[in-house]
Image (spheres, rainbow, N blue to C red):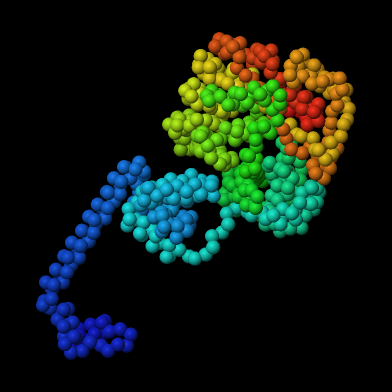
Length: 591
């Protein structure tokens, strides 16, 4: 017995404190040995088990009430007690903001952000969601959770390491842009500078130089001997630099790291994004990698927020065509359709129309794939085919949001077209795009999709056919005499404009211009772009043709011209005669 007592004393002693002696030791011995306190131990155990069961019931009741509350508010419910919430997701929102608004972030994949709150009526949560969507270019979803869920997740902040969150994307400062300004003027200088800098600075230099040169895309292509860097400036690719083949693995790893794609995948295409933060504007870079014979090819699309601020008046639509389109755009219902190949400026035209129509008393909703530019005061929704969110499904949902104006990124199929046409006939103004070569080709394309002619005819307001031509650089513009065959073709196009047409130019003293190339335009001779257009408005004669259900593009073109429509080539020649562009540029894009 003494040995047992000693071992208990050793067990209960701590850190050099005096061991149990006398009555205390005897009491301890009795608890182990015998039977005196067994009933009390059993009673305590029963009480503890009963308390645990009551707590479980209380917790379950709280979750049931929260679930019922979620149903009342039409919100999804979630129990996060056993849900694995990463510290990175939690840090998407600062702790103090979460505490103030009873809100936490429990999922952040980069493309999707999921939030949870105990207060569904807190309007500040909507502001936080909008900020997160704009910052991360991701969709957000708000769930309802119980107070015990919130308490547990807020406590998790205490375990989060206190370190500065790394900046997403790459920052290009104004100082760096100024530093690279001279290099950007001369692509040979850029090529020489690239060979001197480290990999990190090389990627920043390429991006900064592309911004300075006004490029819309950066192409970095692996070839057998080296890596070519090309900038697409005003729609045309120009060689900018070459990178040594041995540096390519490090360069593409740097680009992949910045754009958030997987470094170890080299045999499959990947898509990512880079965010460039500057003082005056925010630039998003869409990055696409593609495996090729000599290595991965990278294309970076530069999406500048300033591009989306184009005014309707600055599109370059002139004369009678401008007045006709302005009248149709200002109608409260119907369809405005833009047509043309990829890269012809259709989306820019739609955004310019939206900027004109976006007023305080008007609700505008867009459905895009993807959302390229954020427009203030407009609700923009991005479709997601992987989740069954198509143009047709999204358009049905949009119409339940009571919009005045709807923009649909593209009319791809009968289902989308039917919903859009019915919306146009029921008091909405619908603007969209369709892939055809000309304005006259849009109606046969709709009919080929089996759209009902008796619905299409009254729904259409106007169809815009367009291309983009380069503007002559004002700094090096000079008059010149075109080659005889081109001059003759230009005269034929201008002469084909009917006499009495308000936009027929004076052909008694024709002058044409071109750019000779200077530092301002990087020796190209062109700076900036402008659209050339053909506007096909609906007339009784065209409506009759549509209702017949049998119409060709050529017939539609002839009737459009008969009713005063200038073709894109004619519009381009009028702009060439005004010194805006060159006749070579008009022929390049329109014929």
